[in-house]
Amino acid sequence: MFDYSFSLIDFEILILILVRISAFMFVAPFFSTRNVPSRAKIGLALAVTILIFHSVDASAIEYTGMIGYAVIVLREGITGLLMGFAANICNSIILFAGNIIDMDIGLSMAQEFDPMFNTQVTISGNLYQYLILLIMVVTDMHHVLLRAIVDSFTVVPLNAQLFQWDSLLNVITGFITDMFIIAFRIVLPIFASIMILNCILGIMAKVAPQMNMFAVGMQMKVLLGLTVMFLTVTLLPGIADFIFGEMRKMVVSVVESLY
Image (cartoon, rainbow, N blue to C red):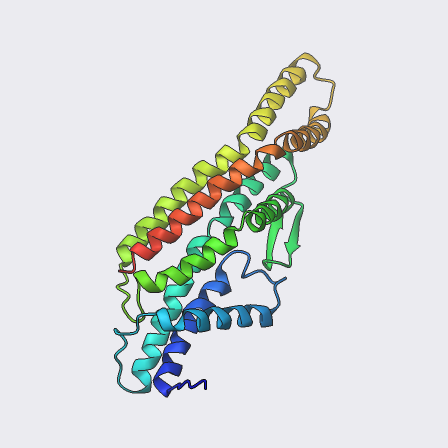
């Protein structure tokens, strides 16, 4: 005969676990996309919560009254949001690289609305973002993120967070520096090609001043930029692996700043 008891205290602990996981999925890449139904997100968060409920350390939970419990809920929500933001911020590398590419080839004004992330993005940035997201799904990187939020309960138990804001600031500042370096590495083939084309157009403008190099150059920049993007598309798996490594490092750094 199956006998299982579930008290009010267990329900309160379950809510705390659910808050951290739900906050993580609200901003984490792949899980936060608008294409994923809200019911699926809620069901996945609840299923993960039930699976790990008995393995979560709840010894640090101490509160008095509703306000004390609300403070703990807020702390768990901030923890999940910080971890999800640390993973999602790596998408800004692709969007920043796409902005630079479109600015070089002359498509920076042709922005479009991305319904998946509810933002205005450039054409190249949107293309690279979807390709990186597909690679993320194929390589099971979303499973790594899900495993990270589950393992966070072992490293940072419930109500045991020690928010080191100075360390978090250093992590974000370091990532912004790395973002410029990684984005420029992605853009470098197109940037070099456009720079060489600009030099050629400058020489032609001196040799044949009667030609309208502005009208000719705009078309050539778009054609050359799209050609280089087509030739370098095979480098995307390596770029995705580099970005995923940065994503893991960011999540680990944020978790280290919480204990």
